[in-house]
Image (tube, rainbow, N blue to C red):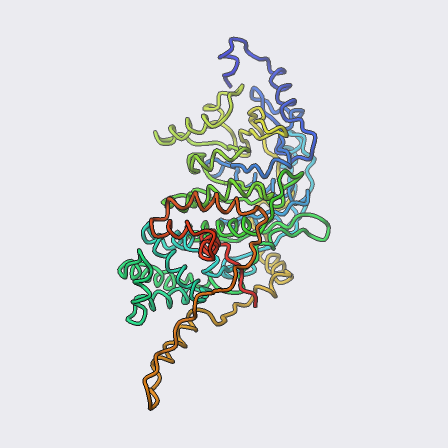
Length: 541
């Protein structure tokens, strides 16, 4: 491996000098997450251990690399250590490979030889795992969201609406909120749109400046398409309370929540957007914490490129602001994808901890991505273009934020091995874990209460009833907008965070919504804040 730093200065470092620099750079005072042993000049050096300060994990991170290079095992290993440190973890299990966290691994001769070589004292271990499944589409406890709390931007992402349609959907949410038409599931939203496009609702539609009947019709058709595809089961009640992600086990270890998604690989936008809803809801609920000794939660967002591909500006702005501001609430986010180019620059700039597995350079586009990846690392003693194309499975280039907020030296690292099963757990174990879950009684059975659909049905029935003798009676009006004082915000930031976020979103959502955002001090402004971030208060049953 070439010595790029030495070449620039004209003084090549010896191997021992490089090892000493890495030892110094990765010596920390507080608790750490051990990543592995450095490789220097082609040799594994177990005396040069590479780690990540636990207190810096809410500075966010990136785990990247080509398919099959070991990304999933890396986040598996990190999740184990976080759990052992008492930190809850959330994992999106796209391929079904992470359920093995609940079962102790088997240490074969090859594994033990590898772990001894990096100075790891390997032991088989199992961890407290909670299995979730979107809408109950899988073996886990059902995870649902109401349409209201999911919000117009996230729902527009699922429906693949353009920016104009997204702004129009926001106006529809505003109408429903003002008239106490609760949007719990997709049929509620469909009923509201059908009302607005009917003869009875045309006056209301005209009062919603900026919303055309044609655009409302397009949104309705997309909504019906979601229902036809069977996606209605993901929306409804009981809605999942994201505080469930912050639990610890009786022995003090953090609970690892594993959202199983293998049945949704054909609906990547749906599951990636649901992950964003979870983060947005956490953002709303959690108090400001400042600097902490360890994060309150670490959130691994796998296949992160799916979150950004084809996203509208408003959606990207919402992600950027959420990632930037949620750090102060003690939540660390690790994006897991193939190359840093998969993540927008505004988000990438906030990811202080980098674990980059090998890349492939088979095409001109691959070569361009490789150069872009190298440019995101500090100057080092490695030829990173060579290292990133020749690193073996389970090896990665690492740099993290040290306890003083500065980047550590770049280290090619042979990564540690997990103590639990690296792959899917036995189906019987998963089923038993789900049945024993304290969450199952609370979320296991769907509930269909009175909401917008039922209210509009009742109004239609009343309007079509046979008239009684005497003066004609007008149909009962829609419920009046709420006039009571707004409920106190659950935030403790004095409104500054909300104002900053809403300001960032205002320019991206169209003139109709911008005018409403300017009224952020009104009840409408607060309702939009909840809707935009998917953080409307949950309905209490």
